[in-house]
Image 1 (cartoon, rainbow, N blue to C red):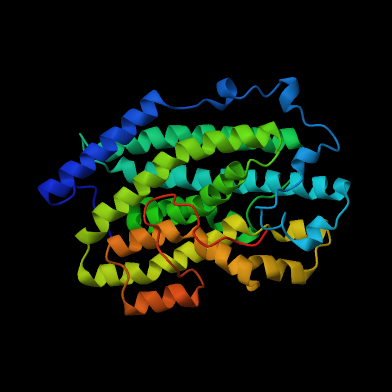
Image 2: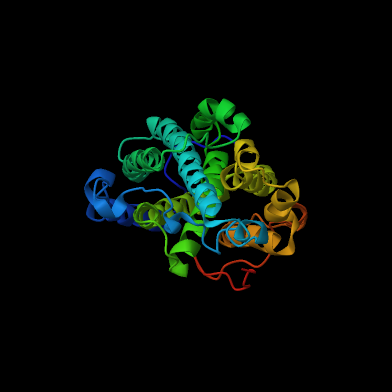
Length: 331
């Protein structure tokens, strides 16, 4: 499943792809953010203080809407909320560093004049700023969180090598991490919940720039998957949902330290991830856009469809990217 950095085959598709990448690159030039310019970290408004109810998880957060969490005292809700939000930022940072390393591996082999080189480099610059932003958020909250689970942190230094050896799989992995975070953050912002300004600023910047990054990953896969052999496409059709589900759990499910820190019952964890009907629907909703991509790229076949279903990430496809969920989840 090796893929060269040669320009895509087919003049019409190649032209459309190049135009899209040029548009994305221009977007990065004309609309980008610097976390130390665009966020007033030292302002009174962004100060992190004790007993600030704006750290209470909103109901659209899987844990925030659970009866166990809602029954806690405000003080405990705040502590749980701060830990969870700090850890989401930390695992996001860890994922972004893997992304940066893998994309750097990929562009190292890019030919002169490659539009992928330019856009990927813009994206790496933006992702570096995101790591600064996420770490600053963790530091300001002041909770020593680990981020992803131990296994992920152990293998993370090796994952960027896939950017050269298996770029299709690597970019599928990028979407597997980006789509759930993007979905969760958009839900929170759309809910207009009263969240701490640090969260609001960080999420707003991240969602704005991730729109380009996710768009590129979609276009990259839509362009390059058809260039593979029939056997290669079939293999990718099976790998696609497995990578999606595995990395979703890494990104979305809090690490073991979280559950022990707050003595959260195992039954609550099971309901949230992913035993209860509402949580299963949430899981499916995360991947409506990538199901659309898989269908467009010719990766939905009788075998792969059964695998999507077995992994509990099947369902309706989006009609367009970032379409709000058509099936409401329980509060």
